[in-house]
Image (tube, chains in turn orange, brown):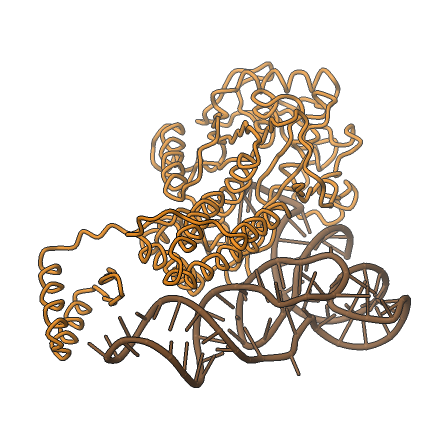
Length: 455
RNA sequence: GGUCGUGUGGCCGAGUGGCUAGGCAGAGGUCUGCAAAACCUUGUACGGUGGUUCGAAUCCACUCACGACCUCCA
């Protein structure tokens, strides 16, 4: 089976053929840590986590780098507002980010380089670009000369003239071309800065990713990813800088995830219509959020609503119920051709540009198979269960039984109810059931025993 | 204005030329003290118009609607 990936650069679905056999280099643009992260971030990093896990499953060894842009206007602004060093602000939100990602079962990148730790490398890169005539200094700022790079626009399919026509940017007439972008920004008063050949200043946005990608992964990498909003200008500029610098292709495959939408609008900080990951995790299990994020193809826009979270909560419950039923099974699993067939269906879905929606459908088919066989042939059901758990793990979804440490009071009511049921005192049993419900515990009687859920 | 993308049944969402997607909700049933779970049955969808083809949700043209990007953004 061949893995196909959609490449933004060629606008085509292509066979995935990495440059160095089984070794894959992947760079995904990280966050600017100036605030807590929202579902849009979660979607992006879940999407690339799934890509990473699937590639690893297929036997590739990944070197995955994701940066932190820890020096930036918004961080500086917040630092000033709180009278703290910019580093403190960045560290705070980096920690928040990592905590969120861990809870969502997103594997950490092999490296998370920070921009502020690589200023010298950035200065060197800018110096070379000036030397090569791809950049020019202007009163302490350094700009990239877009017209000098003949393929400018190849990633985002734009050309310089068209963009200028529709530009909403106030034109800085000092620049040679309005689209020229800053590689180095002169420091303003009270801003963190570093010494450079052009005076005190700091890196512009874009250059850090070029430098860090080349530094940690080499001049040409296999996969470069990020949110679709980064295609222009961020990734376009990265391509220009990097390829001007090295004269090599910067990245072979460009993968971009679609936005999370809310009421048909993009969720973003600037529109102030975002839900933070913490908000959601207070009310929902992280795997419910993760499942929700996998319900459609990663490139497409994903509509967010609490209704959908509820739907995915029920979805997860179905799997947990099945898990519960077989939790005491001791026998050996018996894999059948039906199960193997479904497993292959799963791989086919994933080979088709990581189609997690179709892959989830396969898990449901396995679940149905398991439920059908659970009484007549628990061995087969058990095999289905193991398969479900393993395949779900490729998606980074963990199905686990909830911990059931209930207070003594609840346990004693349960015991009382059990007694009542034994005596067929249904009235009393129902009263006790309602009593539990009042206390926030929902009860379900099953063949194997009693299930109880905290609501 | 330019560029790119999307439009599938009550809702969500796969599907790139013929073959069951799947989930949620609904209806009927089996099971069950009740409930829940599970299973069975049920649902004749592909924005519109034209074209290509033996055959199109799937290809082409036009058209309508919505969105994103062109400014910071995952």
